[in-house]
Length: 378
Ligand SMILES: *Cc1c(COP(=O)(O)O)cnc(C)c1O
Image 1 (cartoon, rainbow, N blue to C red):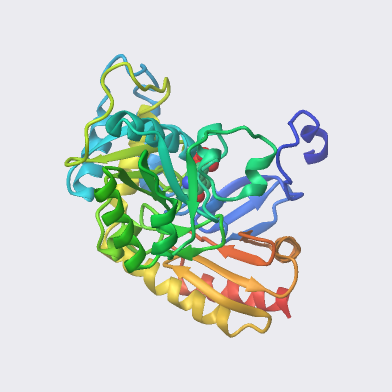
Image 2 (image 1 turned 90 degrees about the vertical axis):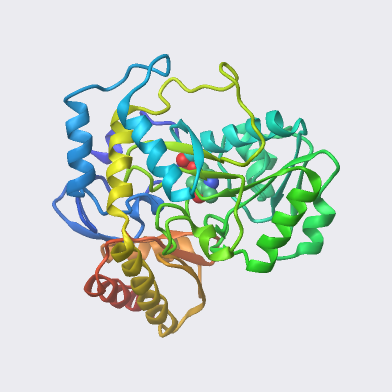
């Protein structure tokens, strides 16, 4: 079945040889009825677990009411979601789109419009998406090279190196962008000093500071926004992956105090603010309470501590349930072997694995995943 159908898909991905037909909590079932423990979480997307009752019900109810009318008109889920996000941020306006890369595109355009400056400073090792704009500011030359020329006036600074940040900045810098924890780039966190240096530099240059929280946001690292632990307030925040527990959605949040940008007609997305996706996202936000965030922190610590005890695992890092570790051997091979043992994990570099289970994961399932990883790695 899998083999027969795959010939009709462009070979853009190196997919694993498994076809999933059902999900439930932290579990997936394939087309042979085999069950898998999901510590990939659809790449840090399935925050509440598969088929979570609250987000499923919210999406169902909205499906039965109204699917789409475009942004020529108002819809209620979109307005409610914007209100909830503003409350979480402490005063922000939202632009809705359908993916992380689209949220980044909106950021790039917004910063240009609001500051009148085209330069972007991003970080080496960063990941911001695959569209031409988001790829241009992604700090991984191997991903960019094939598709050059991209946007110019982009420079890259080294993670947690304030001097290199200052050196990368130009007079025409209108946007400084970074992930609070680099996800695809290997799970590397920025430190408080660096975040503060970025804030100060943005203020000095009249640039906007954006935290790309597409992967880290919506509770993934143990607080609703990951930047909360840095003591720095950004002007812009991008969200996507976990926002609607698996339905496609992206958002750009603009802080109330930030320089004003878009006027009507200057940016748009036909599907942006889709009522079904926004209704599911509202349910996700309602579900992310102190209890769930405490679970993220506790399970993250349990998972990290367990990983540190497995021979062949080194440099366990991350925050909450965004965890990376170096392994002896090729990470892709280890992920493939884990799949054979019915455990899904992802990679974030040639020799690094990444674990991003649902935020609702239990201690029992964390221990089960650790036991499987021990088998796979030793
Ligand atoms: C995944 C990711 C993106 C891109 O999101 P898509 O929905 O795949 O376009 C952008 N930024 C970060 C930090 C990401 O992890």
